Figure 1 (cartoon, helix red, strand yellow):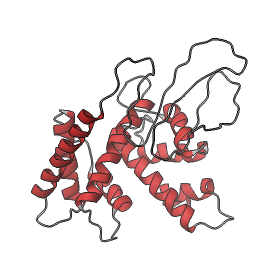
Figure 2 (figure 1 turned 90 degrees about the vertical axis):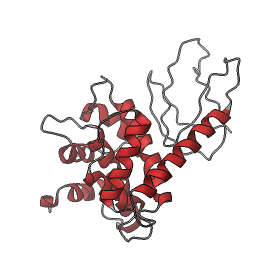
Figure 3 (figure 1 turned 120 degrees about the vertical axis):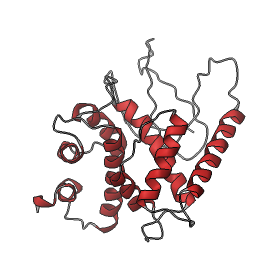
Amino acid sequence: METKMKRNVGRETTFGIVLVPGSYVMVPFCEDDTSTEFILRVFTETAVTIRSLDDVEAVDPEPVDEIAKITENLLASIFERNTPSSKVDARQLRRVLNTMWRIDKETTADIFSLETCRCLIERYNKSRDGLLTLDDTKECWDFLNMCQRHFRFCDLDDSGAVDIHELLPYYDLTHGKLNKCVAVNICIRYADQNGRMFFDDFCQSVTRLRTLTKVYLKHASDDVTFTSWFPYTMNPRST
């Protein structure tokens, strides 16, 4: 499948694209046929396997599938231990996700706050009863792993926190040149007084941004832009 992009003559370019599931080959090149070196940074919402065509050995997908199955079974076990029913509320979800994170990432810290779990329920609760099923929780887990990859992409100085300057390229890539005013409002809402956003803050902000984008696209009228509407959702005093 050949994907045509807008021509960009700059030395550095960033773009986002939606693709159907499949196998793809990325071929960087110069239009004037000159030889040069390229650095490709690939940024995906779901886990993918990437390899160079220069690699001699083919990638065996079976170990990846086996690890995914083990992770899925572990999550199901933790889920069952933390709820007497088939669904979890925000506090139970927090225990499930933090337990899973400690085991899977080999850490001792509780990463996710109650507010982040409430935002996740708001996004993934299909039945609108404020509770998540096991399948919903699996979607949350996949989303949080995506957030971890994205956070590492943004954290250019490897400080464990991101600021507005590190976030702007990320928003450009994932939300199509998100207006800087919107990005600033996100940082005001979720960053600390030094402008730093830590991983839990980042997960919460991305969850909220995606939920609100979906709501806007569904309900907003033509005369209301996302840039003018979004600040009111971050700071009610703006009204």
